[in-house]
Image 1 (spheres, helix red, strand yellow):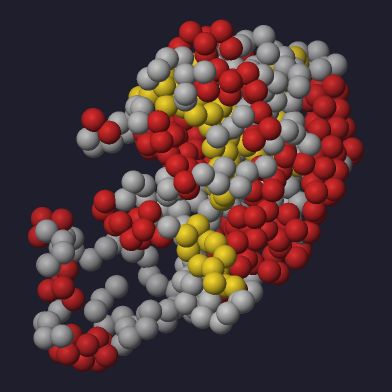
Image 2 (image 1 turned 90 degrees about the horizontal axis):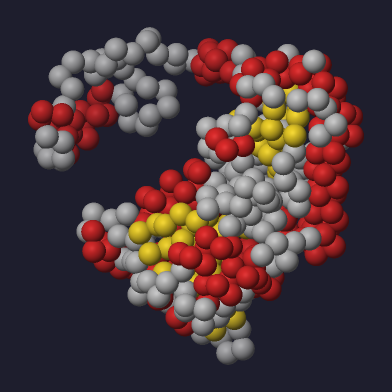
Length: 464
């Protein structure tokens, strides 16, 4: 692609315009600009080996659609995949609101110009707090992993301690993110992660192992409810109490959609709650529809450690009038820059607004009914599968996900299920070798009775 190529989607790519622009800044070529930023040894000296351009939009569209033509999606197949990206119904109103021009941006805006968007974000914060039974929340962060990472760093600063406890029934992907957040180029600032065993009989946190690893050096215990395997932590209150006995924080990660039926984090002693809002009206988007949140009590020791922006009510120049401003803005990396305690972005503010629409649409009763439906369907599915020879469902007491143990390799089973138009559960055989050949199945309100019975019949055929 030569210097004389005029790109239809890049403004000012006409050679004569580029020449005038370079003359205006007294540069002989674009390479002269790169020389100030990129070392000579890293510059490519030859043209890139790219295919010929498709300048016509129609040809480009057909090319891209051709690339996608072999893909199979949840619109084509019945999906029982979850493990961090779940298929839930997205009401049309969520799509409409998030597509409006005043909201459709990754930029979070400013209090001087975006009061409407600030109010929408404030509603998200308020609704998340109501769902979690907490008092303060901020704009969304990237995903559950980022929210968990920020939360344990908050706990470390609050307690001035450098070790956290994390059970093995936490998502392995999330554990990797935690390790990233807890690491530091300065060893003195690194946070040590100590693993707590999982009770192999229940899939829950091993309470005795947790007790044995508690000390006055622990900043927090981070656990999830439901945990990665979908199991509800029945001993959540005891876990929080064990942490509090040594003045450590209880940090709890939750799937927001479960809170229509499960106890709120605050009710069993969580000091910091975090989690994922993707199930709340946000499409899976190939794993990109993530939206993490953090919430705490309204105490300065917590609020001062929030890494993200906090939208709050504020008075205006008109007496008796209120607007929306940013509380303690100097905390954030937008103000403190390289001296900030944490770094966050604004890329998921739109998803927060979408989640607020979803929560407003369903209300408390709708969230409760949805949660009950999910529990009923997931438990019914598990009961059917357990009757199949070669299948064992090792744990009970789950919300929407549960592990399934097989007598054959999961990879082969899932390949066979594709022939039946089904995405089988995520293979967790390597993540949890003690379970043997196992997959994590997810059942939500999206699964009709016919879909569940098709899975039952298909697995019977595959395992015969």
